[in-house]
Length: 327
Image 1: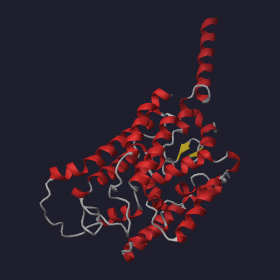
Image 2 (image 1 turned 180 degrees about the vertical axis):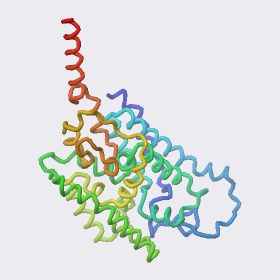
Image 3 (image 1 turned 90 degrees about the vertical axis):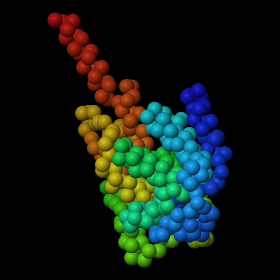
Image 4 (image 1 turned 90 degrees about the horizontal axis):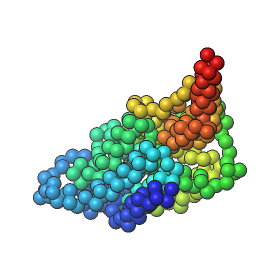
């Protein structure tokens, strides 16, 4: 295990050592940006200047290279279904995309996409790479962003691993399925508010992502403390029930191409359903809008010692072998 994770730990150390200039996506009404114009979005009048594409690429090359490295780590951990690699990725997300870059997909970005008000492309190449990777990975595999890339989601998943299991409260299925709709209501309400007022500063009251930039009022810190305390008892509380970005990606995940396989025995077996901490498995169905591709069920699915499918295959093969011997 040490050998398999050593290269990824090296990547993590590189990520930790990066500079602190943000990639350009996490909105902050108080932040100043020395490179793009003062307007975060620069809706109109993209003036020509003396910067050449070569100079722009040179200036943004470190951010581009570091995100490519992080994306590579994410995909390797995803395809190998490795628990150690998964947690290396989560730590990298918190340290690099969280505290170093304060880089998360925000509901403000969803609003910008709807209205066509997006960051200036040539000044925000790393952000477009980040956002593009999020969209493409969601269409291909589902909410990979929520399960591995989002720094706040990674933080709560790591928190969940240090909380004693006896402290957890398992939300009843009937309540869980209804509470999952709350995030869609928050997404709709926030979008309507943005469209009606054009005041995007309100995002800070529905997204706690400012924790990484540490710019907030006392009331916001108190609210975050309550949220994290509640997360101790209800795992992944914000991500499962309150995140408007998760809701938007959940809608996009309806287009997911490569979905998790299911065996015919999954209709009766409840092993994966009980193991799923996101409430995304309901009988034989995996609800893609709730699934964040955490790998838990996929590891069970491929475990020949735990998954009943493999036991039944072995029994069937043994029965066929005995029948052949009798004949």
